[in-house]
Length: 149
Image (cartoon, rainbow, N blue to C red; front, side, top):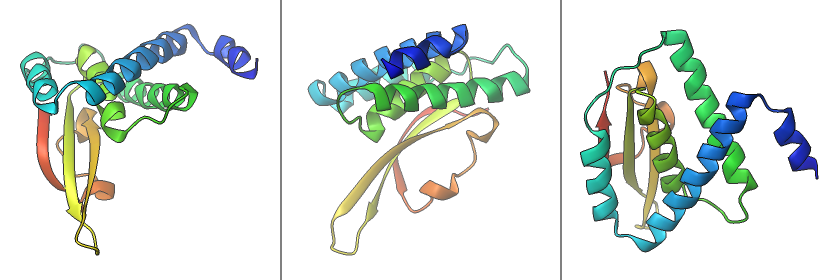
């Protein structure tokens, strides 16, 4: 009941973003588990590699990026299963690019001390899409989808 009350207290835009994020997280989670990444990569490359300019102001772009990040986080916490970083990144990338916000989906690996590999996926968006994120600088980028400004 508490989640329902919290949902109704959200603004109309937050409700739409949360619903979109939930649907995209569901679809991306299923896609990652069922479809080979080669096909996902090909689809995203064909559909979202071409850059569409953002029609709004820079401050509006920053607020939409924050709202998308928050919506993905809320949706992931509300789902009954754990979502992978790849699923979250796919959903965020699609939401950003649908709105014409410059975004780059990156996937990287790093070697661990026990000679194993650790993989991670993330999205750089907006004006910072071309910059390196200090949190992810230890990962060697192996996949890049999308373009920065």
